[in-house]
Image 1 (spheres, helix red, strand yellow):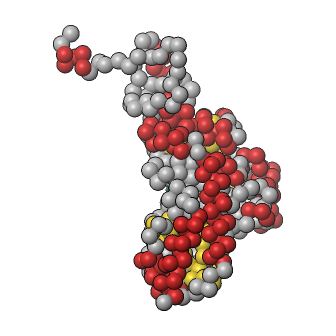
Image 2: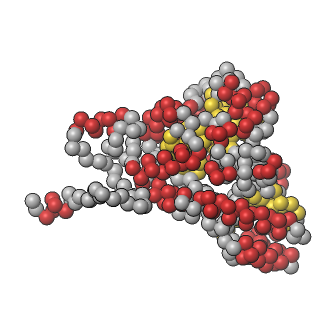
Image 3: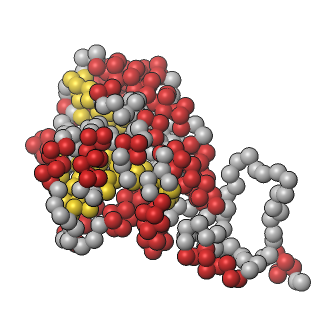
Length: 384
Ligand SMILES: *Cc1c(COP(=O)(O)O)cnc(C)c1O
């Protein structure tokens, strides 16, 4: 054949007597079949063989299997972002005229999506505090399809009482969906406490290095997974093989990183609590909730000097970077009243559980002495 033809049909060897230690990146959109009869099978069911990467990809499947295993689920779907997983689930599990019960304090993107569903599809949303089974019982309606919770809420650190709420939902035939991004499966496995579906922003702790946007939905039940998989194929917000590969690489050190995040949070939060420029530290106390076994890596503190102090602190930090997101090896910090919530009045800030001097910090895995020293020099500048 001609060089032009030979160069577009280069084949990779398939190792016969050995296998690669690292998961290979299957950077391919399609798969060629020796037996054309088998192609339809790959397009009809999730484990029907690999035909087209929107339906299944071996690298992505390796990630899905790993996180399903970690969460104690039957199967998982990897998506292109955390919101990709959340919107896929809500659109798959809830239809026009149905009802959702959601924790009041949830991630901003989730809050916006619930509002959108309410307006466009006449879906009723009742918001609850998430700690009282009686409150949940009172919110149930015959149209309730989903109870939506976060193990540790972003950003307030509010901890829902998962073990108390899931039996109430189950008895009413309502599915419990839990966003476990903050706790990670190292510190909480919601399926063990009765959740039906767990979602993650893999952008955060699971990948862990600020280089991936991704999400996952993990299912306790295999048949529910298969039904949602059909929607995932229609939605098309599936994970890319390279993002999946980076997330797999991140998972190698998830346990180590979570341990270090937790130890660093204890050290930095403890130090901040004794600083005269800091009026309050709001750090989740997982000890109080038996189902969460560790300190997640992000919390809030309030500066006594309000908005101006926040702006000064941000301008002075060197090691800790001013950036949105969390769950990275790098420590990240945000001053909502000076940035994302700049247009809000003090009254409106209070409704979002913020003050003009509230700072959100996500602690990385740097040496804790360097984090404390960076905050110390910046807080000295604030006090000057
Ligand atoms: C970041 C985040 C999300 C959204 O994830 P993306 O990957 O940014 O789409 C959802 N839930 C929580 C708790 C988050 O922190």
